[in-house]
Image 1 (cartoon, helix red, strand yellow):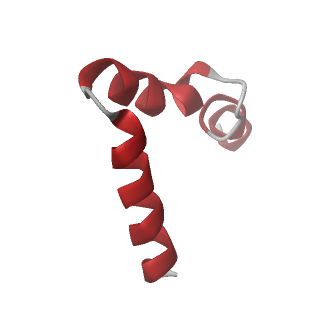
Image 2 (image 1 turned 120 degrees about the horizontal axis):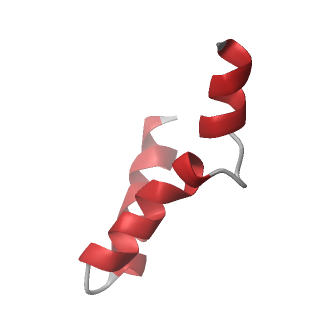
Length: 46
């Protein structure tokens, strides 16, 4: 099961890995702004 998770969630080629970005691109008018905010939050968190 661990291997399946790695293959289907953490693999950049898998649909599950790409799905969040695809949804955001479809739903938001300016997805790039959203991603910039997420990046800032990520860097401040780490």
